[in-house]
Image (cartoon, rainbow, N blue to C red; front, side):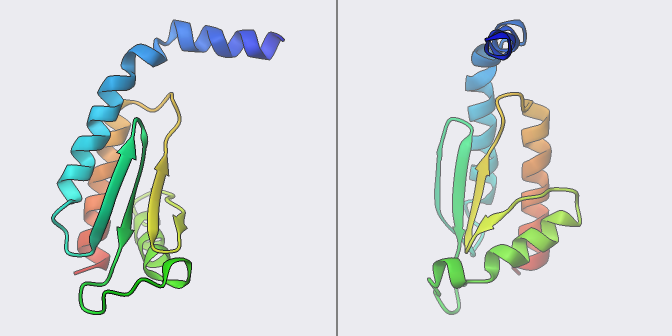
Amino acid sequence: MRSANATLDVFENEKLMEAHPQKAAAIAKGLESISNHKWVKNIRHTGIIAAFDLIDPEKNSKKGYLNNAGWVFYEEAKKSGALIRPLGNVIYFALPMTVTVDEIETLFKIVNQTLKNAFK
């Protein structure tokens, strides 16, 4: 019971729900910034959860979980300090409620650089 009350205190004291629309907007802006990359397809998000598919435009490969594009993305993003575990060729973000807008903006700077470096 104490941990549940402590969690509710964090939600209230840090105004996590009040900040949610700004965080969701930052994610939408970040996704928009990658929307024209030739490998990025099927962008989707709700709130602070987001995903996109990596599809080779030359091969239009849809091997899904067996596609290694996600792991190529993972290795490149890791060089910049972001641990983004792929689900096959899907890059998936399930951010914590405590994430800040600045952290989301930094994350998408890394995502953009990763796409430029690994998927030319």
